[in-house]
Image (cartoon, rainbow, N blue to C red; front, side, top):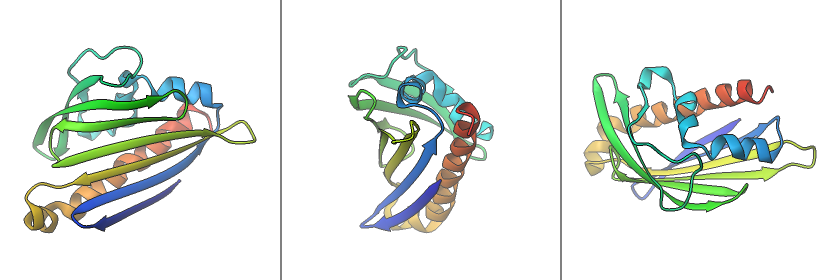
Length: 161
């Protein structure tokens, strides 16, 4: 997996890419089910979906979570699935939660050898401006990298790399 975190004009952006050893229909079926998020989040984050999302993601869907964002710090998080294009892309955006802004694009594409290329672009902004960046910028950046590294390991196991 390639993983790159950048910062510009108050916005952090993480880009990841991974090849999954499965056809796009199977990968999409897995990732478009909100209930599977728990398997893709490190256990120490104590991630819990607190709403009852439908089986499949759809534009306009609201999903609520409770998550440990730092040791001893829990947060409620509300996201909306804002865009879904079957077997190509879905986007989730934070409506309420720990970030000033969170925009997560999930891109999927078939490869010529029958595998699936999965690319994520996460754009986020921390609260408290300069103070937030100074106190938590590196900590949160490393935490998000850890989440995506965990997800790579989990998806490799799920799709048997």
